[in-house]
Length: 268
Image (cartoon, rainbow, N blue to C red):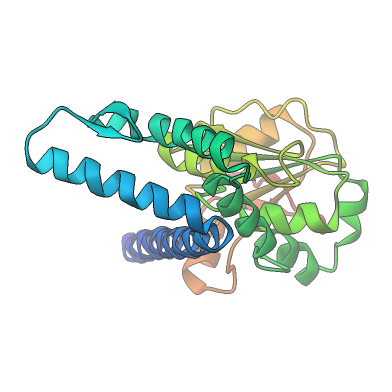
């Protein structure tokens, strides 16, 4: 590969990664906003209570107080304790009012699952290859680069509930967001988010009928080598592979593609 093509591939790969991250952040922001609205609609009295709690806490902080009184209880102003206090307030509110408060995280998680894009990238990849039958025999599916919103994995769970899915995400903070979104959904026992580098993951437990998908915003070479060396599962690049820069990237890695998926590296 010439230096000019390599530079072109690298630049476009970075641009695409940036677009993916920005898009995910905006999606999470919108999800949080909509979940907050739904939370307030479902729990109006409690939301009013929390708003008052946060308002008094904010005033205490501005006046440099280390604590404040709310509902005849003393609270510290430290941010690390805030969520714990809100949970305690929820219990106290439930005990006094008899109204069960639906936790915000439950609402956000279920909303992410409910509104997940249908026929997303994992499904679309095999659909375009006319290989949807592979989902029927697959027992374990791995997505490398699952991101902070595993919407494509939610989509697969809705369609193929027998499949156990593993999402791999190199950034631990992003992996935590993904884990939180999965935690309270119908897919919680079928999707596991792992915070680690895909090139270090052990794919040895995968069988020939299992599937590995690699997101387009992930550096693929070392991951593909790792999968091929440690497992029998076919690999698919889950990406807008019609883009010229990505085609060049695949060619530069000297990969041989079978009718099922990527199975081996070509001889150099």
